[in-house]
Length: 325
Image (cartoon, rainbow, N blue to C red):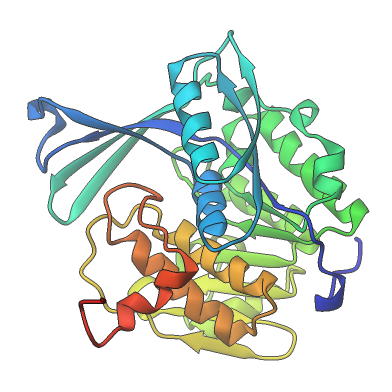
């Protein structure tokens, strides 16, 4: 394993993210999709959500994937580029862009269905990677969704991590477990394989328990997860806030109190906030403070990434005056 980079060795390139982004259809009103006459069109994907969140916070970002040679792929490219994200995606005519459908059955619940089997992105392989782009990156960010899509996507994830380590590029990884894509046992096996090569691990408490198979106290759970080899563990705890465990200390941060509109993408917003502050030289306390605010912002708008804040907006959730002039 390559040694982890310290602050003075940070890169000046972009953050590289790799993963699937899907065309998104969302029912335009609360209730059963079967009785919704119209739908809103958008897009979503964990890695591109993080890429947009980082871009809005001033961090140059490159998103790598595969898309169908179809209108859905055109839409995704246009949206990402309009957000300032550099798109590095091959277009194929043999497989479609993936699709996700969101239904708000009640004001407080969201049902998301994914149609990604056989999608263009599920066919990604190490050949879709540009070693020069990864080697020149400031940081590589991956999630547990990509390796669960297919055997070739699993190999792509391993190859990307190996390229980053060989070039001395730090790696962050969000466990992002999806039970519809693979079993907890298969996910745990993969996580344990890569964690020694990951610099920053993001996980929900239930996701962390997939790896550790024990632990209830958040700090104990973080320490148990760190035993698998990653020097920084960040636990996303929802309304309970978050904690970060580093070699030096363990710090915590309370959540921001809000009335959520749509919680899909909150974890990705949190990750973007943490990484943006980390790359700016922030302490773990500062990173968590920005992360919980960015995650809260993601919950205040419909969509997966649309609510991601810009740096100039981070103070809005704690502003005493609701009107700015």
